[in-house]
Length: 313
Image (tube, rainbow, N blue to C red):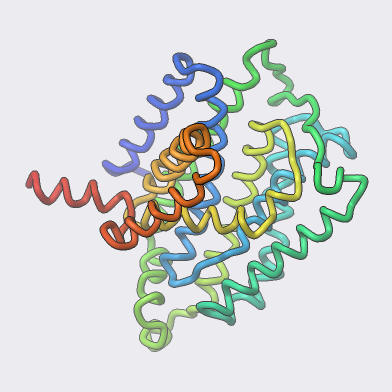
């Protein structure tokens, strides 16, 4: 299929970001890898928001992806990154297909609270599991990519390049999904569900598909995040982690698939410097930032690009 202008720009941006990895210091590579992995989760959350749903439980799939990588190497002896990523996605999608039957019936605060409840159930299980390190979690073991073992000192860069590549493919895929009939129907459901039903479109089916897609992206992000950090712990499934995803989604807006990646990078570096400069008040700074966004940029960061385009035309 022919790529449109936005998809070409996404690929070019992915290539440029990947090349920047050879110039950035290690600490920036680590932060960027974690931010891009987080952006995958946010991209799935944006798909739900476009249909009028807000999930406070994406930490469920984020944790499943991370723990799949850790447990696959620790208990099953799987060290191939491709298999570990695939295992996390398959488990998350399987669980989402079950939970989606129930969750697709609910809207607004009921959907949000139910997703939060399922995430906190997993958190409780992980905290009480001594074999998985309880609250401390455990370290990710050695890994390779399709039999290739990265040379010493290049593992951090390798994960960064892998993350950028997967994010680029996911961004292009979700861009096409948002422009497809199903993707456009999501916005129609957000505006008026009854009229969508009169058109012969099943709103529950579309919401179900969105939830499963968001789960797959969440697990993929969690798996890449755990590989980047080299560690997994129950905090990945805690409600504050899911709330952070919602924060970044609001920061990004739903205007374009590139917005979650930009917002996640901005959030990661702002938080890093905020913790460094005001370690005891950085949460207040993030709260003020969210308030300003709601007041002056209700469409998120991407609305700045839209305004600039309109002003220059």
